[in-house]
Length: 187
Image (cartoon, rainbow, N blue to C red; front, side, top):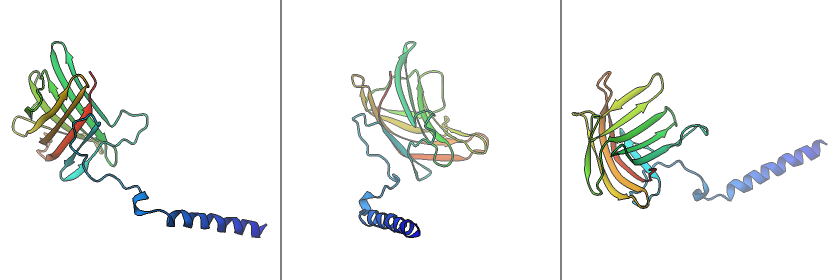
């Protein structure tokens, strides 16, 4: 009986060694550490740098909301846009870029400033963990959103963005750079 158990253990060990020695370095799954390419075909990609570190959508709760959402809708006589993506890796973080009653034109750049009731574009970053910490664009701490592709027939919106956002409680600033998105939006 002991010989059979010992033989089974050796066979399992031999199988594991054979499996790992046959793997190439390309077979090992690595976490994505680069931003997605800038595309305009509705790839459903989004990412940016947050204070110099790559920030990509990633969820940890299979029953939670999707890691990203995007809409561009005509409601109550005006257009509304919203892009939200989150990452639950360490602390729950999410970035939101939105507009109030603002119609986009392909090739145009819009200032991300304070959230106003009409004709405004804004950005918000939330970080949870030990209490929610919100950062937002203001009339003095701002950024830009450029719409590089807007295809209403295919519901594709693509663009680039950057912004600074301030935590109003203590004045700390977070820097969002090299942002890009290529989304199929909901209407």
